[in-house]
Length: 118
Image (cartoon, rainbow, N blue to C red; front, side):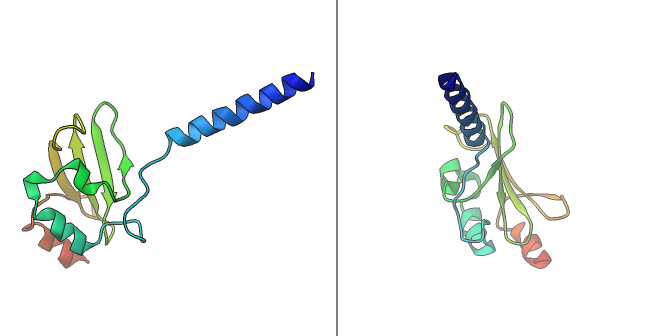
């Protein structure tokens, strides 16, 4: 009887650990958990050459299902969004969503809108 009790407890602990690890996102980036506007400016200079690996050190939330959609928090309540079918090829679309929900193409010219709203 005691063995069955330990077996059940072990299975429950294993199940909780599996669920917890499946819900993790990438934790990295700056100490505040977002990409600063200065770092964003540096990234925007790559524009269309920006790759998934350029953002490895930053925290993100993966919201895609069948498609990679990564949301990176930005200073000021904005988000940098990368979408694509594979992490092995460059993102198909890179854009910024400002705090009011407006989507802006990710390039140095559009960053002025973000700076003005800061």
